[in-house]
Image (cartoon, rainbow, N blue to C red; front, side):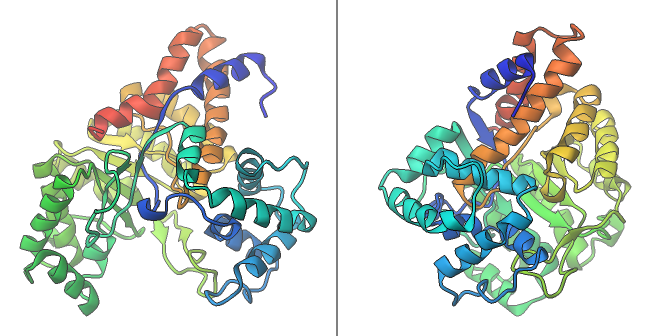
Length: 400
């Protein structure tokens, strides 16, 4: 909630801007939720509930969905101080008609019933898209996704390459690649993948990278570095941006919940990618990092390198306490035409609205304090700046 009249006015106007969400994990065949379990099964809630004392009894695939929801809600009063709780409260109010001040275990049955009733409507997905003001949503597609059965103008494909770079030594991954492309040769197969994805409307290639990865031309004879370099070459040839999500350390908490085992690792630096940035000046690299200290490094690289672009506020940096200073630094140092302000990283459409609203409130407050009040920009100019961050830059950078 904003208590600044100027920021409130800016926020209201910013919310009118149709959104292009340049990174999500939406399944276009099941884009919207079908039950409350689809909402509260999101790893943020299972992580927080487990961290706050919830056993994993109801988190397995064989557990009754309502039992799982009930247990997550039962523990909600232990983490209702978090940004993620605020997302859920906004979803409950906006999409389910919840009118309470707080969500308690006493609300659980009503919320489940209401979700079942509303989400069963044939046009539920369209209702969510309209309320969220979403124009396009970028996907994260496995390399062997046929990319069929959905509107690729609305749900924009993106080639995810983690398995190609880090797991191509596994027989099952090689089998998937051969089945998808009709060849056992990795170089030929990757070219076929790019041809297929671009033909189907893909607008980016993406990968998440561990903290110790350092791509170099001197390491390209075989293995992950060779495949990574081939991908960069194909991004250059096919004119696709290469999204780099840098610094995640996988499986740190070995007994964690599903998707709740990975953590950011600050033992990484963008100097590890300097050779890449220099070698491929024609390729745009939207970069996501996981911490505010690395955001300062990203700001400096985006300041200097024409092909390096700050990309959203990823994962553990996606809470207001980190977004606010990171956004302020980017706005003060990086050319406005290079900034991709935000993405939802959502698995279900319902999360786009509360996540974007969180960002838009911070953006409105920052524009009020740093641009409009000091008379650096008029209100109209501030709105145009917001439009670049939320829509126009994504359209141009991704040719979407």
